[in-house]
Length: 238
Image (tube, rainbow, N blue to C red; front, side, top):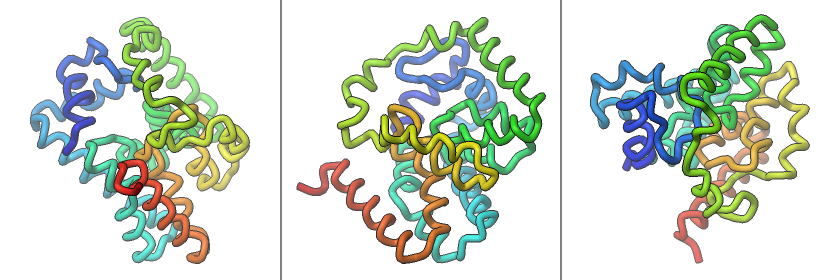
């Protein structure tokens, strides 16, 4: 339970200027998380997961999802696995709810989940690009990021296109890039995870919300299919 938080995120929060093995996020994320240090490893992750669910519920309401569909989203593998592992994607989806200048910075903390929010923010407020440039430049100056990232072999041991833990459609997912620029944010919210070589199931919280807006005869089979693939991924199926 909460293995990703306890193994990667919590140690990085405790030592924010020493990049932990296996972490690829923009290091400023863990500066933002510093107040969580006062809650301890388990108190902090509980707050993050509860907040993540509230963010997803708020997004579901802005997408005008009926309550039963929102419940199905919450009880879907991307959200449940997110909670079990102690992940952060749901919390970062707040990028779609905040003003542009905040969204531009937050979105690039984990672009597999929220890239479209950043692109949309820059389109609305071009000057917000300055925030992104400053975050990237200072991350390089302070942490030598991304050149100091270690643990890339973790991805290699999974493989990018064949391993079941990878939910990206790479390289076919590149065809979804135009969706990032649609005025309707649902397109970019859906596309963001699939244009990267690797996307964990927790990064599909956005696509799951978007699929839930489709007709029930489309949404429900996809919801079931995601469950089947998750069981297969976890070796629960032969």
